[in-house]
Image (cartoon, rainbow, N blue to C red; front, side, top):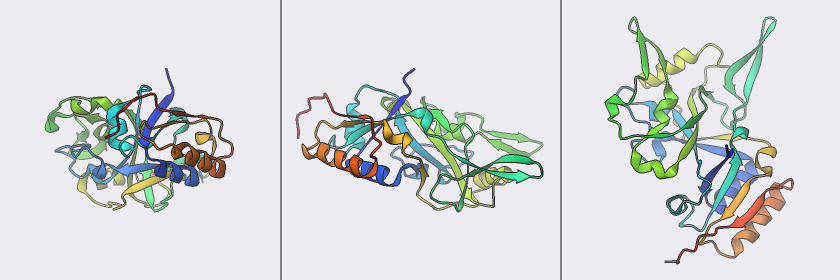
Length: 254
């Protein structure tokens, strides 16, 4: 299986990725599909879910170029999917070392995130909202769990051109190290409490994640784009050993 996944964006966003060594997770309430993550039984979920969206398709996608790269003048980056992962805080509890749910490689430390099923392959289905899936497990009238990543992992068939894999965070305001408060966070989501009111979460990585990435320059990009990209790499990522190529698409400029 090809481990490379792809993200269509602009040269300006690439500059921020290289300078800050971050990948952005946007709030699900701000994505282009206004039904994304909605469900009749969990109306507040979009306020808590944050996603980084990537395409599995190594063939160039004209719709993705059009929608996300400033009318084909931007870039497509490719990164090894296995390198995108959260880093957790560990604490000592008596004689044991415990892995908490507190993620340490994000820029906003006031948030408490947990990441069950962090990587989600989006399924495309023309579901009815109220028949999406049984996401809420109620036993003895108590809320036990919400399989929240499934809310960020299904879209209408009209979006299947994206062939999307997502990385998903659920974030609430932090109550500490995140050892024992998962239940509180689940109940907060269900009841619409403890919303963070942030628009995005930036996850920090070291240079190795970006050093061998693929950069494909869009079919409508200016001749200066490669010069700008190479200058950014020389300044912010001297360890770069990936490749920079131009799109093979022949598109008539409008």
